[in-house]
Structure formats: structure tokens, C-alpha cells
Amino acid sequence: MQDFILHQYAGSPFSEKIRLLMGYLDLPSQQVEIPVIMPRPQLMPLTGGYRRTPVLQRGREVYCDTALIAKILIAQGSGQNLLPAAQRAVVETVSFWADTFLFRVVVAVAFQPKALSGNPLFESDAEAAAFMADRVDFSKGSTALQMDLAVALAHFDLWLHQMNDQLGASAFLFGEMPTLADFSVYHCLWFIAERPALAADLAAFPEVMRWLAQMAALGHGRVQSMRAEDALSLAAAEPLLAKQTILAPSVSVCAIDYGLQPVTGALVEAEHVPDAYSVLRDEPGVGEVLVHFPRLGFSCSEV
Ligand SMILES: N[C@@H](CCC(=O)N[C@@H](CS)C(=O)NCC(=O)O)C(=O)O
Image 1 (tube, helix red, strand yellow):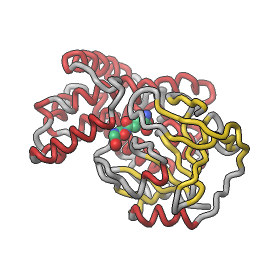
Image 2: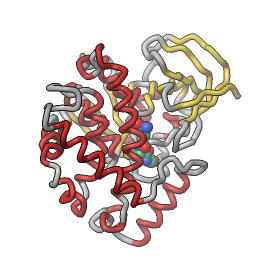
Image 3: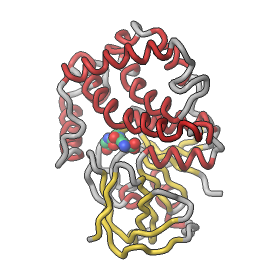
Image 4: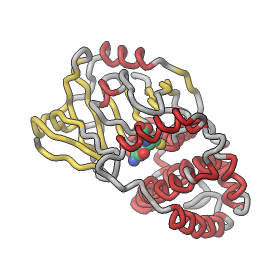
């Protein structure tokens, strides 16, 4: 079987969700450390322009968005207990809520002025300006990641109190075992806990702190690092294993919230990835690349 290659960067919360999930599922991973800002010349030929972080590569296939990446890893790593049949819809709903609304709240909290000192992205004026310009470009056409700081702080505080109360009654969000929802909520809080100026604010919530420590202890598992150019060459050298049926010759797939960089190609049905938009692209110098997106959170239109 081809290895999973995770394209990620250390400070990315959504990457942390997947790093921790791979640790929990005990799946070996090769990790490529991608630049925090564009350009990413060895990654874009694989994704076809999609630039949200992380993405998972296996041979000539690329899985975008952690909702889909998580399902692929859960299926591979016998992690069905993370999506228990009797709670699956509600676990997925909480997971989606955390990955969207809660993430938007924590972005505002994490980038508030008092949290910026010590953040390597803001070490010099030039680095800060480059980061801000990159994220303006990333967010073009969308306000979905923006929230007024006062509104974000009020929502964060309300939710932390609820979460602390609930975690006093059970080890994890849905009982005595973690589910996918724990991983989605975890990466949002990890983003806050990572910032020295904010970590102290969480100390007022002892059950949340206990749960955070339990989640962090799951670890990242068996990780090896890989160079971006090697991941790209590996894609070019591998056969496309998946069988597919063409559904539409030319479509454009795009996130519906932010990071609105579309990917175009033929829409195919890929048997091994249900509930996905799977786009077959021909990349110069690489050949066919199959890029998968979850249907939830993405649109697909014929072009
Ligand atoms: N819904 C997406 C969100 C991913 C996301 O927002 N990632 C952030 C980093 S944590 C990002 O893409 N930032 C811009 C970038 O890395 O270029 C997912 O679950 O993968």
C-alpha cells in the first residue's frame, strides 16, 4: 500500500487535528513541512490550486479538507469508534461546527494584539506584512473568517463555561471514548493554548485543561519527514490505482466559505471515496492527478 503523505506546517491547527488523528490511529505518516505563506511550487501541481492546509497525498491522489482526510484515515486505521453509528450524524455536525464557527472565533482570539508577541509570524514588520498580504489574497471574495474581537471573546467565554461543565461529567465530548468531534474541538483550543499570552486564560477551566492534556497525550505517532520535491516526484512516478467513471468532463470545485481558489478538471466517481467530489486533472510534468473534496462545505459546477 502507498504511504500517506501529509502536507502541513507546524503552526497550523487543522494540521494538528490530522497529526493527532494519525497518532491516535497509529498510522505511519510522511510529513512535508510546507511554507506558511505562498508560493508552494511543489504542492500546487498536486492540488491544482487548492491552497488550504493540510492536504493528504497518497500516490497520485490528493485528499483536501480535514473532514474528508479524517474519514479516509478512519477507514484505513480501523477507527470506526470515532464515528459511532448511533451518534454519527451529531458527531459529524459538532465536528463541522467546530471546524467552521468555533475556528472563526478562535482565529479572532488568537490574532488579538496581546497574543501577537512571541508569535514567530510577527517577529519582524516585514514578516508580519508578508503574512497579512498572503492571507488577504487567500481570503479574497470572502468574509467568512472574520469576526469582531469583542464578539469572539464573548462567544469563546460562553462556550468554555459550557464545555468545562460538560467535561466534568464525562472524559470526552460524547462519553468515555473520544470521537471525531473531540479532534475538531481540540485543534481550535490547541491554537489558543499554543500562545503563551493566552494559555493562562484557559487555566480558569480545569476540566477543559484536563481534556486538552488527555487529547495531547495521544501524540503524533510514527512520523517521518519528507521533502516537497520528493512527494511531487513520487506522485509522478506512481500509477493511478483508483478506478473511476467520468460523470462530467469539466467542472470547477470550490470551498463555500473561504479559501475560494477553485480546482477544475473532470468530475469522476471514485468508488473508494464516497460522498466526495473527485476531480481528475492533467498536470504538465506530472500526468493525471485525482483530487478529492468532501461535498459538505464545497460546491461543484460545470464549466
Ligand atoms: N475546512 C478546512 C479548513 C483548513 C484551513 O482553514 N486551514 C488554514 C490553516 S490551519 C489555512 O488553509 N490557511 C491558509 C493557508 O495555509 O494557506 C479543513 O478542514 O481542512
